[in-house]
Every structure is written in C-alpha cells, then in structure tokens.
Image (cartoon, rainbow, N blue to C red; front, side):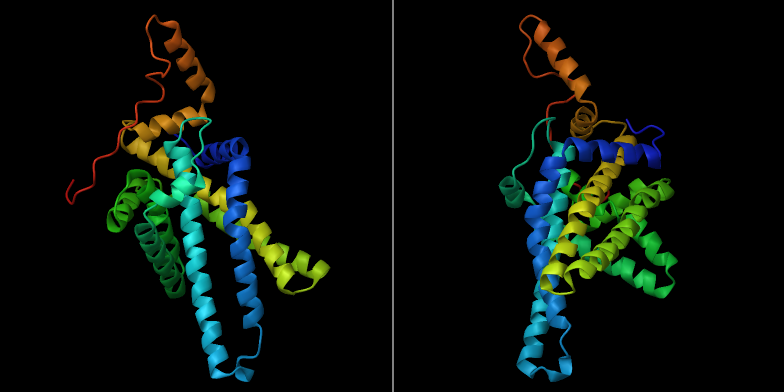
Length: 289
C-alpha cells in the first residue's frame, strides 16, 4: 500500500474518508469547535475594547481569558485530531471510537507538547526567513498523528516524522499547505460574509469561526492521518496492524470479501485473518531502536 502515491492520490483517499465518515467527523467537530468558536468570538469581542480605558484588574482578566482561550483551543484540537487518528488507523470498518473512550485514552500531555513545538518552531522560522518555517512545518507536521498512532514520546514522534517525510517533502507540503491556505481564506470569507449580513458582533464572530472550523478541521485532520499511515506503511513495508486497519477502511469491499471467504471454510472463525490482521501493539520506542 502507498506505492507511488502522489498528492492527488492522497486527496482522493482523504475525500473518500470524509464522505464515508461525514456524520461522525461533523458531529465530533461540532462538539469540539462550536463551543470553542463561542470562546474565540468572546475573546475577540472583549479584545476590541480600548485597553487604555480598562482598569488594571479588567486588563489582567482579559489577559487571563486570552490565555485560557488559547489553552482550550489547543486542547480541543488535540482531542479532535486524536479521535480522527483512532478512527482511521485503529478502528475496523463500520466501527467508530466513542468520544468518551478517546477522551480517556489520549496522551494529552505528549500531544500538546508536540503541537507546541510544531507551532513555535514554524512561527519562528516564518519570522526569520519564511522558508525555514515552511521546512520546519513540513518535516514535523506528521508528529501529532504519529504520536497517537505509534504511541511514541514527543521527541521520538518528531524524529519519526522527519524520517517519514525524508524523500517525501513535496508530497507532504503539497497535501497539507493548500488545506491550511484554503482554511485561512474560508475563515476570512466567512467573517466578511457573515459580518455583512449580521454585523460584527459576538454572534456573527461565533457563527463564522464555527462554520470555518466545521469545514476545515476534518479535512486537515484526515489528511495528516492518511499521510502518516501511508508513509508508515511504505517505510515499514506494510508490516503493521495499523496498515491493515487502514487498508480495510480504504477498501471495505475487500474486507467484506475476506470475511465471507473465511466464513465459507468449515470451522473457520467469522473474523477474517486478512486483510485486517489481529490487533497488536507496536513495542515502545527506545533510543537507538
């Protein structure tokens, strides 16, 4: 799997996954990003006030609200990307991880650590000469899904992302960068369009932010996970239970055929031996392994 795949091939798989799992992805996105959109809009609305006219206590409260908003947004994004990784890479066709199960088992500390390193490194690179930021983002963009899929630590996930992207730099950049650019354009258009209809108050900002995230967040999350699984499979020659789960999700007819063939054999189990292998956990990563 993954042999010779290009940007268009990845997009086809991303769109196929989004179509097949549209209900789950959108409901989960609404659960995460609609409340976050209200918080974002509230902070933006409060921040539009003249700081000079605020008391010291009010200014401190506004700063604390902004910090809380940033932390909550990061937590929500980590939760959503983790749920998508669990859906695509670890679940059988037709099965969907419950949000409660995802919330219990996500390694929040490590995922937040990876996201902070990725965001800060990319921002610093963009501020310096732009190109270093693009390179840094592309090298390490797969670290968050890799951390969740392969259950690695922060630095091990960053190193693994760099390993997977080596020789596939333009593929990763060509898939993820357009989604980020389109997301910014959509958010800008949503803000302008909704602002022209409803004004620029709290409700309009909430609606625009939520609508933009409902469209963009599933695309980016699915694309990063699909890229990670494709490149893991190529690097490891398909020797992975994760690869098998993903292959069945991409080709459910093959999964159904294997199940029927297994059931037809006398004494055979209803669970097929392939294409979905028996689940097994990847051994913990160790330095030098």
